Image 1 (cartoon, rainbow, N blue to C red):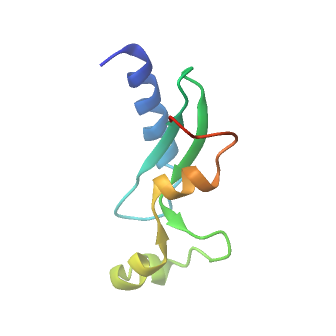
Image 2 (cartoon, helix red, strand yellow):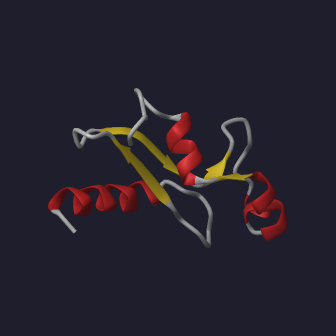
Length: 84
């Protein structure tokens, strides 16, 4: 693993700490071919949903509402992600 991979994995780990899910925290960094991050995401509910404790602790309901870190990174992209 090269130094850039390690740096971006560290950034993904840091970004995973933004998740409010009490049991699973996942982060994602989309990086272009120039080693520039173009999207960041973490697992969680959609922007229009409240992070209610009773929903976060109810696995079946939580899974229905959770958006994957990778999806959020695509939604939050700052530029072209082709080739990322």
